Length: 214
Image (spheres, rainbow, N blue to C red):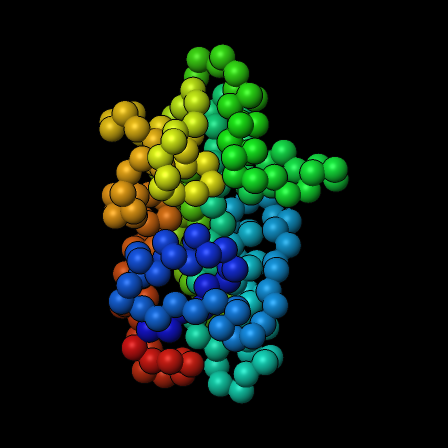
């Protein structure tokens, strides 16, 4: 099945291409489209659905054939001691007009400094993933991955985002220290993608014209 990812994030594309290996995954760049959805919703679901809908409409306007199924996700980290923050603002955590685009390392250090000596380190990742087939025709899955915020960043080279400070207590290491395969098996995004793929695999698509068929 042909799936169009509503993101230009190459880390995310790589992860989903590995998780959804049985499917063909494209991005807006493959359609020569500029796509930059403004995430203004206050929920992961609102942002994911907004991205999917906007890209589906954009591709539909630019191509005569019905566009492929659009996959979009919004994900982030929720920290108990911070009342669920940064949440939907995870990718923009700490951004200011003077510093509008912090690096992953900057955000990780900011999170550690914000928690400081806080005893409660509980946190969880959230991923809401949408498969958008058309107006009023879509599927939504939301999954979590529970862990803790480490006391210092890991030197492991795996993962991205908050992975170097997301500790897995049962393993005693952060996500940056585990293999990609292990991450896909455990992660919020891996679980959401597999559940969504299972839904799509069972779709009755005989009368649904896709840009590319199965």
